[in-house]
Image (cartoon, rainbow, N blue to C red; front, side):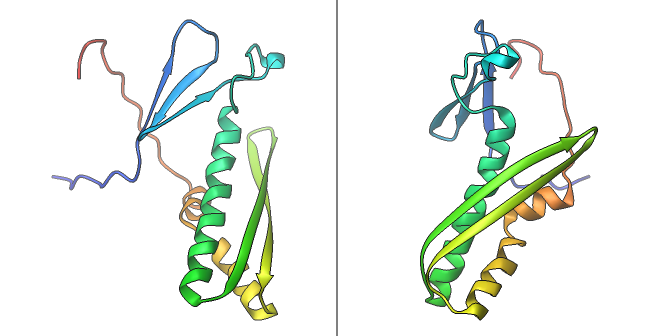
Length: 140
């Protein structure tokens, strides 16, 4: 008998009659994801990989702010840029971080170390299993 794992978050995606425009419900937030016209979409929202990178960038910025706040450091702004590249079946993310505030070299170095240990970073670096099941229409 296995113990049920706690749910960290849940998202519902719904694709109707409009090609590639996916309505997303993440908690109380509504988002749209779509493909650019070059891939048959209408560019109604960011594409799936952009959403993936957005999660990583947001988690990085939030974690660094939380850490600096906990330490009482003067971190006034964090900017994170993430870029996904793919070659064949290999994917790679390049992330650059800009920190603003009155930080010394040791604080900046520590924040860079912390960026490598954010929850989203560790999840992506560790790999993640995906189990897919088919729900029958009308069945809860």
